[in-house]
Image (cartoon, rainbow, N blue to C red; front, side, top):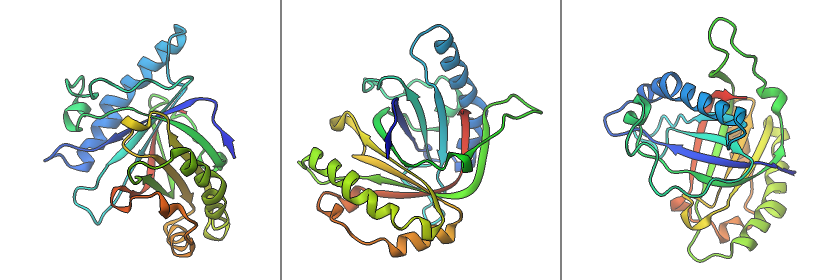
Length: 241
């Protein structure tokens, strides 16, 4: 397990009432991602704070007409950005922000348990602008972990990394799991969740097998099931690889 040397900033995205998921994603890819790519490239070139990587994960929970979230943007910076005073998109700057509910930043510390990056490699586009691009061919589970009030976070995170992570990893090989990442909240008071786990499988059958086989290991002492969400996805949009 390796801790990433950059802070991962997470932005949970949900469409506004009356907006379809497809409509949200089309404007995300066409109108929002290019602007985010450009602004961060310029910042990097000018030695200002800019993201070195930008990935958007899409969620597909067919059983819910209005799932908790439609996707999540992830951007990696050298240092965590402070919590926002006002949600992004409160005053929309593009059509995507007109279609999405205003969203907040969530600073996390990332641990890569199982890399699997070779399965997620992507080549720049050749018939259009190189990025944004897309990748698929996997089934991803995002566990957004809510916790009970007044917990000891240090104890909880220690258990997550030292007990729960080995438990999860022991079930990945038999289920075709090839990537496993855990992110813990930095600014806990303002965070929407205590953390997030991302598990990648070869296919949906493997993900179902994993979920059937995994056994409790004590995480339930801290987790609030009513505030925890498990999101599924099989497509990602790549802005800055």
